[in-house]
Image (spheres, rainbow, N blue to C red):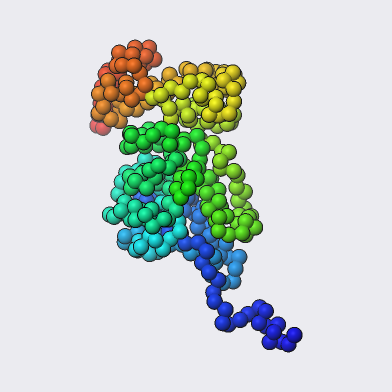
Length: 344
């Protein structure tokens, strides 16, 4: 072997650059979560740093203008490219924020997302990005992960959405070409799982180690529980409380609830008594009343409609339960809780 042969083993000026294996487009919604964007960007950047040439992934932050988008933390990020044809991407990642969306999407976003879906793009919704993708209609016929803290707002915005298609007790859902995530640490798992579809697992693990990140199995994790439920409660209790909140209008039976969380009805009763000092049935009744309070305060629905939406047999049934718990009728509660605050 001569010197030229040795040189050609390592460098050949006629070689083509390595192919791009994955193209991702990021859409930043108003008040998006910086951490959600960073989870993807840091991992993609670390993968790029593993090679001397351009990395195996190409990504852009897209919008209809290059005007900076303000995050929930106040930091602004400037899009790198105009939206253009979404078919150039393998994945469209809609990065939302932790609060209920206030609108303000860029004009044409809904039709652009529909065009992306028609082109066969994978669509990823992070945090409140599920609202935008639901509004665009690109999540229909798919299971959808909704942040537990935004579940009531989602149901109010999309009341006809099938409850069984919503997931509030797990932080991620992968359903064919649709991926949704409640946000938080689970976003790193989502990014790693997507990249593992296209790149060697060893490269991804090396990048995660470089970032000092240890991923968990997001399918076995639980979303943060509702207020009043200790964060160190057993997963079965936290999942059960999230499901009770989700199905407040339908009142799952104890057997159904226990089956959902993978324990026996007797064991679930014991766990609730030990950790919450109450029963699943009592929690379900309270969840129905809390749902009714939210609807009375946040919507103009009639008391009869609220009663029906919350699983009561009629307005009189809700009235009796309401007065027993809060000492007031639903009408009196609504008048007192929604009256204008004195700002003087």
